[in-house]
Length: 165
Image: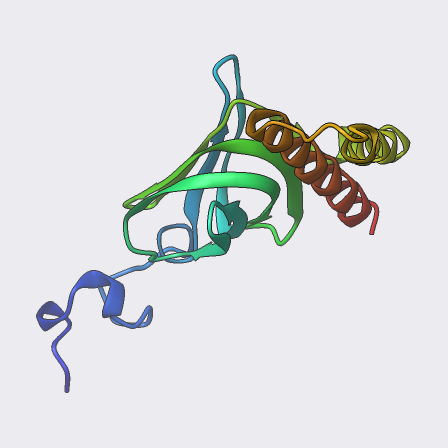
């Protein structure tokens, strides 16, 4: 017989006598999306994926602590109830600390509120700026601004399409 006291609580089977493990403390973490003006989301989640500066990153329950720079892209949060919520973030930072993931960003939009036609227009406008520079070479700042607008418009389109599925 294995004595439950030898193992940390998270490794004790749920059926062991006096030790109870609730689904909430083993199957979820808190996911928060925060902008300077508002807390967009603060909910228990079982999984979240987001665009980091160096590529897509996923977080599940029990993830190690980290701090990373966010890129511009789509964030998908799988809530405890099984529903998915989709957002678009424009840069910022992600921090996992214990059982809390905080996504701190300048701009966040929920996918359900994105007008896909307007996002497609934004992408067309950004693409036109690339072609519209004509014989004049764009400065590095102009090029970075155009590329950021393209990434944001593409992310809005992807998020809006994902939210409608």
